[in-house]
Each structure stands twice: as structure tokens, then as C-alpha cells.
Length: 482
Image 1: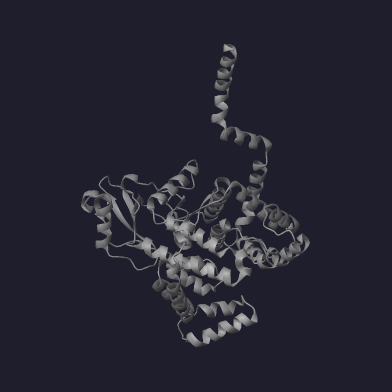
Image 2: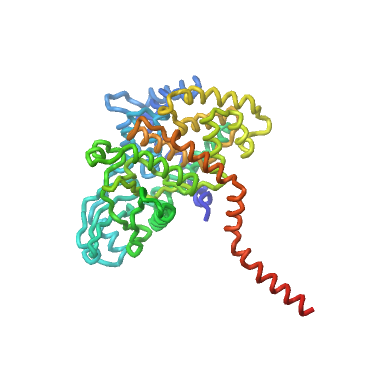
């Protein structure tokens, strides 16, 4: 069943959604969410005045910081809101940096369920006693996220493993939140026709599909294995081993990695790791995932990237992965190249060729508008240029120029922001796009190489081509009989 059908809601639920919507709105206002929106001046004067009125009625100014209150509020509201907060934690352009720091706690600092429940889940999934599977089991979890928590254990074979367990009833809770988000997005699209081009409901569909995939840990194991196959020849990027015989929909068992978080600079230096090399490897890996494979790690916050004692980058947590078609990759590569080269007319051209512009849109006016928002960013020192933020600015032109926002780039933009932020955090002197530009240029040239295209065509159709001699032989026999 498609995700859209699963998100459809019965009519009788609408009154409940209305009451729940009012409750959520008031709770968020009390936490100071409107204060963040008002301070950013996202809206016109009339809407801002209305928001200030609601803020005056429900939000009591206290010494406690907004980020701290918002953190508690999102945890109280449920797993879907925690997912929303995790996405916000990577967007200092939407909320202030202090709030982002608080919201980052949603990535791995949620209250855990008890060890007795953890053991019951393991025994239920394996149909065996914990002591029969493991020689030791750490009852204290090493990570607690929105949908799962992780324990360590030692197998009877002596191998140390990490055990990821889904939280009880998490699927029902998360899905109910996403159905509610879908209803809100549909209401907004009906009430405010001008925001239809933002495809809010489609973005909820994408977020729901990606997040719900996290609730089947066999899919996460499969994603880890696919990523491992893509990088099997890489000495600098290693995927933890999956123990399939112990893995199920509710439990994932994988190799435990001893390593240092990629953003723990002091620990990395103390262990004599080469920070510059680590940065360069990370940038190359990001490029290869997005452009070469079209299959990328969609949750690249620093807590999900470890550096092992040999200086190898090891990703963990494969619940959120993104895919881009070859067409999407070619569009993205050209877009980034033209932006870096300040060729704004070409930026407009590729949007037009991708059927993202209306027929009545003036290409010259759009190119001028893109120049106006790009120049202040691209004229900064290369180390301060953020292409992810730049893409966000271009998406902001969608209302004025009726540009169709492509939902498949939503997760990618979030990943780009996290990758840029991590790169700057560990090595402020390096710009990932400065290092990526030659790789992108080479990829574009390779994908447009006629010999390469012919080679790929032969590879895709090799089974048919191998049957040609057999077909000719059969045809020849038919003719000879006549």
C-alpha cells in the first residue's frame, strides 16, 4: 500500500484533529515557538501582528530559555514531534543557534525504557533466553533516540555487538502523529492556495515514508548492507557487520564500533588523528553517496559518525537513507556547478528544462532574483559559503515565481546542512564545496561521455543482447524448414 493511502484519514476523525490541533498550537505557543517565528520576520506585518497577539495571550515570558521549553514540549507531544524537532535542530536559519543546541538533545538523549522490557523484547524476537545468546548484556543503554534505544552485549563467540531495540508501540504512536501532520498540511493547502507549490502534504509523505522505514529494522540492516557493498573497495569508510541471524523487524544486532565522535576534536587530536584527512574523506564519501550511487545516509549528525583507532570513518544508524534518481543527480550537479560559477541564467535554464517553471515566468527576471539572493552569500570567503542555505533561499523564490518545490530534495537539503555544519565544526578552514567542485565536474563529464552512456546501455541490456544469437538461430531454423 502506498504511503498516501496509509495516511488517509476517515471523516469522523476531523473533529478530533481540530481539537488536537488547537491543543498542540497552544502547547507550542506556551513553549515559545511563536517567539522564534516572530524574531525571524518570516511573515508580513499583518500575520506578525496576529502572531504577537497569540503570543501575548498564551506565552508567559520566563527566565527559562525557549529552546529548553521547546525541547520538553516536543518530547511530551510524542515521537512524530521529536522527529520534527530533530529536523529543526539542523536549521539555525529557522531557529536561533541556542535553540538548535537544545534540540540536538533529541538525537540521542530521550528517556529510555527499562532493561527488563529490553530483555523481554530480545527473548520475544529470538525465542531464546538472553543468557543463552549473550555471555554478557549491558542493562544500561548507550543511546536513546526517538524510536529505539541501543544496548551493548558480548556474544558467546566473544564478539561485542550493539543491539538496537524498537520502543514498545512506537509504530502506532508515530503513525498517528504523521496522519495528523498530513491533515494539517492538507488544511493549509486548501486554506492558503498560494502555498500549494511548497507541496507540504507531499513533504509529509516523504518524511513519513522515510521515518516509518525506521520501524522495520530489517530494512535498516538491508540499507547498511547496500551501503557496505557500495564502499567495499574503500579503505577509509567501513560499515559495521550485520548479524542477520539475530536481526528482526524489532531488533537489529550489528558489530559494536569503538570510536570517537567526528566532532570531538580534542579526543581526535589526543589520539593523533589527522583532522584534515578525516574532513577530506568525509567530503569524498558524501559526494560518492549522493552523485555516484544516488543512495545516501540521511541522518549525518556528528553522533552518527565515528572515527575508529585506524582513522577510518564508520557511520552508524541507517534508519534514514535517501535516494536520488540519475535525473535528479544530474540536475543537482548542474545546479551546484552553475551556482558556484555564478551562471544564473543556466540555473534558470535547468529549472525550465526540468519543467519546474510556469510558461508565463520571465527567465530574465528570475535570473536577476537568483543573483540578488546568491551574491551576498557567494561573495563571502569560500569557507563561509553554504550551498545548502543557498538552495533554501532559491526555494524561497517559489512563491513569487511559481517554482515547483521538489520533495525528493527535502531530505538531501537537510543532509547537506548537517554535512556542511559538521565540516565547519571539525575544520573551519575547509569548504566542502570547494573540494567537491572538481569531483562534480568529473562526474558530469563522465555521465555525458557517449562511450560511457553506450557502456551503461550494454550493461543494462546484456541479458537481451546475449539472447540475440539464440533468436537468430531459431529464426534461421524456421526459414530452413520452409
